[in-house]
Amino acid sequence: MSTTKASRIGEELWKTRVDKINAELVTLTYGTIVAQLCQDYDSDYNEVNKQLDKMGYNIGMRLIEDFLAKSNVGRCANFRETADMIAKVGFKIFLNISPTVTNWTSDNNQFSLIFEENPLADFVELPDDGRAQDELWFSNIFCGVLRGALEMVQMQIEAHFVSDVLRGDDTTEMRVSLVRYIEDEMPPEEE
Amino acid sequence: MSQHPRHSAMLSISTSNSNLANAGADKQQPSQNVSTPTQSSSPGLRVPSNRKTIYDRHLNRSRTAELSRASFAFLFSEMVTYAQRRVTGIQDLEKRLNEQGYPLGLRLLDLLFYRTMSSSTSSSLSSSSTSSSPPNRPLRILPLLHLIHGPLWRLLFQRSADALEHSVSPETPNEYMITDNDPLVNTYISVPREMSMLNCAAFVAGIIEGVCDGCGFEAKVSAHNQPTEMWPGRTVFLLRFGDSVMEREKVLERAGVR
Image 1 (cartoon, chains in turn green, yellow):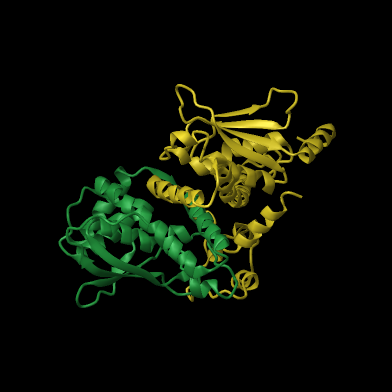
Image 2 (cartoon, each protein chain N blue to C red):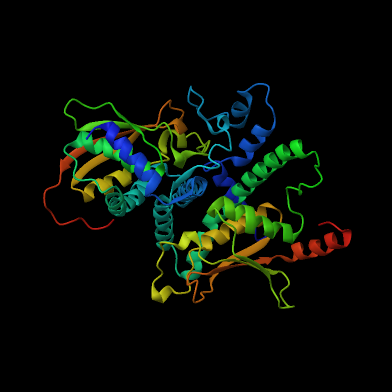
């Protein structure tokens, strides 16, 4: 399936099958979650990153079902197709954005998602404490969501941010690597 | 003051979460030098070379933006689950959800004022009668309640709340109730039987409390289940204003302030 076709599917689904809500409510709700974590973990940002990833993982495991039910798409033929499906359909129907898929490695097992827009980070400025901009990945929940969702469709992946405009970088980029396709196993327990 | 720890909490996260107030102020003054506001307000933060910061984006950019309801539901359920791990009981859980909503209220208040102000300025340009536009900051309880029942609810949930009532009991003239027949935040929440008292709209109660406090109306707000046959999820938000507010209300009434 081509990238343009995936984009078209995403657009169509967003228009016809998605219940909408005011974006600012979502943005601020996410903001208050991150702020609460920073408070609870005493601004230990590495721990906050971990917690966000965990929350994302829990979400991802459930979100995949909603994704499959709404999109009604079949199995992806390869990891490149999976990447397009994530960027053009997944992100589109949940957050109305389509990050760019790029920087593939030659073995087609690693790519980057570049976020031009990031609704979670609207209105956000990181704490000016000399550490947050070096340690906190504000949107780290995305990494967990991808990890959880793909695990449910038998792909073990690793995802992490490599840059974020909130940190003063020029782009917001997430690196996604395929670790392996999971053969028939018992599903792992919820974290 | 009992409000003290709260305010310090709010200050500590105001930097990490959002800075609507500052951004709003920056937008309202025509600035001569575009780079000044950011530099002066955040000397230590690095900014992208393409200047994609909150100060360079229009505050109304996301005014009509939409996201999927599912994304909210997923985040909210994680918030509740996370809060649940750190509390001892239902009341404690509701208190925590309330505290998470509170800073949102403060911020949304700024956003509401900023937007009603810019829209009333533009309408006054065309209609010339400026006196008809209501004051932006409510001074009395009733206009505040209308602000919550109408504009705030519409901003959050795309519709007004369903009812606004004053306590009929002479002992509690400081109590008001705002009803939502079917709170959006509870759409995908199913409460276990043994926790039937729990109402996760405590989060919204916190938002309301933030709006009241931000306006200078000290209040405690709580969410209560009041199901009817037609509306099983009907929720009543009980607003209890503090004594200072009620005293001021009397003074203002005598002075003829509306």
